[in-house]
Image 1 (cartoon, one colour):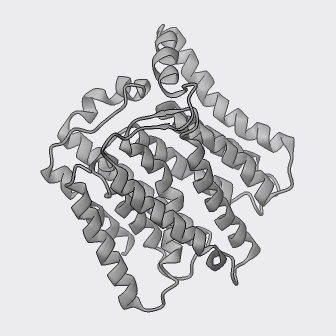
Image 2 (cartoon, rainbow, N blue to C red; image 1 turned 45 degrees about the horizontal axis):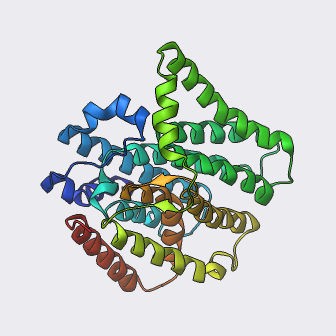
Image 3 (cartoon, one colour; image 1 turned 90 degrees about the vertical axis):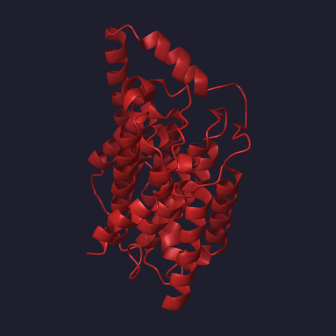
Length: 315
């Protein structure tokens, strides 16, 4: 029953979408997304419904990960709630856009890595991970940095084997090969490489420019990252070896998220969505540390009100 409550909860956190007609910012470099969804994303009804569905599905998948891998014994929906809350920190992160769509595939990919620890033959899981990251990256190329996460997962979870890395790369490049074949047959491959790939991969370092927007949301997320880093011993104390490795992998994911601004042209606030899944999982577990339910609910209520307030601000 608790899972079903995520739907009305997400609808409440979509308040700015219902009352604010601000358009969803999409970078011109997201060429494939604009080709496929530009007309639909400009429709207010589809924008609200599409983003709501994607956010709820990702929140549900995060809750399933917590339950499946037993990341915490209580508060199993906290991670899901935090994902929805983080989406509500800025109106542009609530929109149906390329980053939210790409993050949907990345969220599906995470448990594929979590599950390789005890598998004798993880070939299918690693291929699936590479395939899902490939799908995410064709809509929003910065997600290709999570190929590094696949390498880290093999080093953290297993004994290093070159063939396992090749399985991840095989899944990833299968997506790009199929995309190239489709674009070549339509004579769109040159435009794709010039606009989308050229628009993101620039010979500059630290090219993240939000203008005057998004810095409050960025600051709040940075505070959550710091809190989780400070509480790192909490994620290791009295936990199984598998749980420790899984939490380590989530911290590595946050670090690799930082690589997404290297040599990439980032000019939209919704790029912050790349942080939401690993940060929501960690913060959801961290909220179980206070054993006083009243304190937990107070923290949650404060964040809920802050999220609703920030959505209506052009910060």
